[in-house]
Length: 327
Image (cartoon, helix red, strand yellow):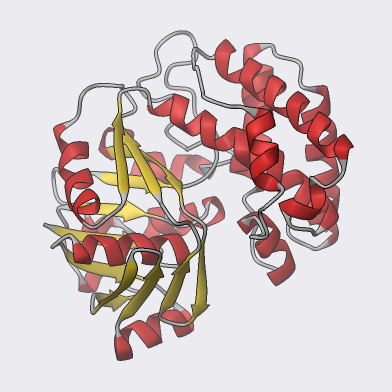
């Protein structure tokens, strides 16, 4: 199976290494020093279950690769317009595109049903660029649990002892194409789930992001330090309650246990990626991770007072760094 990973940074590099180990013909869209290193020496993924080395074809120009059997998009949300502009050469008539991204996805209301079915989210997909260039019928949702870092160009380190990926169709149907994509990753050691309720999985992960990202940005501290303060644990319970209320108003039933999550945070030194972006001056995923849940709350008529405050303060912090809206 020919599979291109579009945006082969930390998470994308990890998935590319697994796909290659699972027997796929892998290519990468990457950039900069990471691209140069992969071209020269291949891709190395250091994980708890072993080191994986592969030599995928790597480029920054999709037209060099041609149509694929599938594409995994692993960029952060601010890069979606560039994906829309560059992905066309990878798409054959039936090529599915798996979006392994944090936050509310651009396709969220495709095949959703009800009065919000088909609603677009311009904060995530300006001018419907991705909707028009790729089409929601190609989309497969992806939710990943894997703390990854690019240690140096061409080398990805995976912190988790076990990494997990959930795939699912926007229309919640049983999906042969999702199962086919899960198979090589499962064979390569990734814990895989093909879900008939992918939005539940999206909200389950998003609740983790909401209890980690805002505090990390405001304190520039790892979760272990944030949650050493008792008041942070109380706030996490309220954040989860507000997030659950949004999800349930939209017909979703995510899994979340604030007490258990706080206990895990007390051992977590890995900084959330949105904080890494702030510290490195990179575009931040505020629209997909923070703005969009509040937009959905307003659509659903759900009050979110604590999230409103936290997201407002995050915007101020990011705006001050020149990474959100007008400076």
